[in-house]
Image 1 (cartoon, one colour):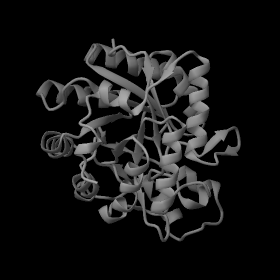
Image 2 (tube, helix red, strand yellow):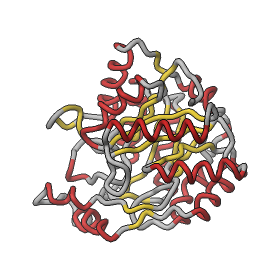
Image 3 (tube, helix red, strand yellow):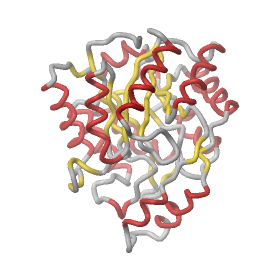
Image 4 (cartoon, one colour):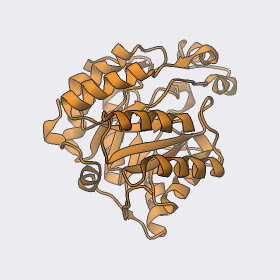
Length: 312
């Protein structure tokens, strides 16, 4: 069974690289918007902030470390939340691109995708007839031919350069059952040491579907592979976000919300901010009698190096 914990870690994924500016005016784009929404999400109860960057001129995902460095110090100065940077980046970024900001910032945590996969966003494009920026529609439609590359070599490189050299621990993102076995391979090799943090992801086209039985199977598989050596969390895309977060918490896991994963706060209603989603899931968790982990709790549970040792 997963490592026992009586506290639920709430992660918030602030902007991501999936949704585009046309889809929601609440999606943060500029460094100041990302900083402000991150701080508000932390104040609402998020212990971990999962961060991407956007080109402030047109909102497209960017790997430019100079953009990251415009909001990371603001967040650190205003909140004690754990900063978790992406190594997934955005569509068509190379692994070298994806590592630019993490190697500069040396954060406490980084996401780490545990396998290559089809990553289909193209159905989203059919929902819109006009676009705020010219790049958005081709960006989405082009994913019918996109493979999100995360080879064993890529994963090993990230574990060594960020983990062994800089003490950054990973949010191991598993979009399907095979990704759990990839993770087990690296645990067996000694590159990943417990307690490690597994993010089970459901509902992305190309990964496992958002069915409750799939969550149970993923959790059972992780238990067989890892015993008590891991902690776990769940994110589900779109309308599945809140139901699956609730199910995960009831099963003893942690949760991730945020505008990267869903733009909505309820049926047909766009969220006004990341903090609104954090507040909603916190209310659900507390009504269930569960305790919300503080950033200090998350650092203790995940054996993080602490904010004094980051590069920003």
